[in-house]
Length: 319
Ligand code: UDP
Ligand code: MG
Image 1 (cartoon, rainbow, N blue to C red):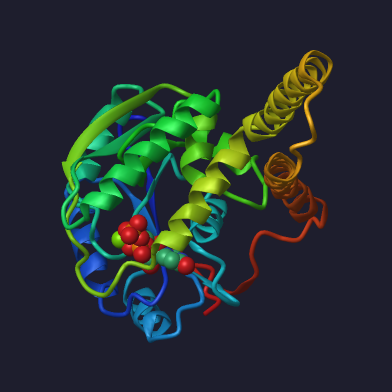
Image 2: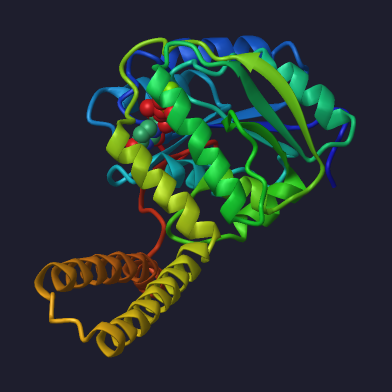
């Protein structure tokens, strides 16, 4: 049974090359969590870091039995690392909070989240009210992305909400049931539904190090998000085909009339080139769209595990 008044909390922190942030992140989290009187676990997922992240984590684990480490065999990406962290949450945990190691999420927001949780909400989103240190282009593209994805899919993905949110045990169980390989966590969190509230915060710049995101990765994530939650692009492909056929039909009628009425001499080459190139383009686009989905089917049918854990460091004493 969930314990609404004095819940046990698990904070899940995916880490990839965060050696300079681990300690600050740990200290600020512990500082806040100790104010709550709640029991808690800190679940760090080491996502194949190439620096000393693991050593730093092991030090914390040795001095604090609330620290659990899931050490991956290689880098699997943040969405997968987060999923793994959720899988390893103890059975007696009442609420889970994904958290970034770079301190971009102010830990004191956790207190507000807990208030909402106690009021009976299952999911409490932390909404960024200010985007600091981001370029104009990033703001615009992110706005556009949310517009498109919320139009195309039947779920409402909240704007300016990252992975930072509180998830109740009930919602967690639902989320854990979703095992698709291509994971767009923001979409998955929204897809399960449940009673949702929001709290607001200002996002800080990274404590140290650089973001692992670049435009190519962001475009990838956008395509990921759309194809995970909507088959609308496939329909668009069919519509495009229909439209082109219709235009071609009108053109054919026009050619016949022109031939009968004016006995038009052939003026073929330019119009033929245009038609061939245009149709070729449309076909390539639609094949590409179909390919996106076939690729996803391929990923799913292989039935590979989502991630490979090299070692778990937890209370059971295994180290
Ligand atoms: N992260 C991860 N695996 C990756 C990339 C990132 O576990 O392959 C972690 C990273 O260490 C951080 C969190 O995911 O704790 C968010 O990453 P980042 O700060 O690069 O993303 P942003 O805040 O710019 O969205
Ligand atoms: Mg960050």
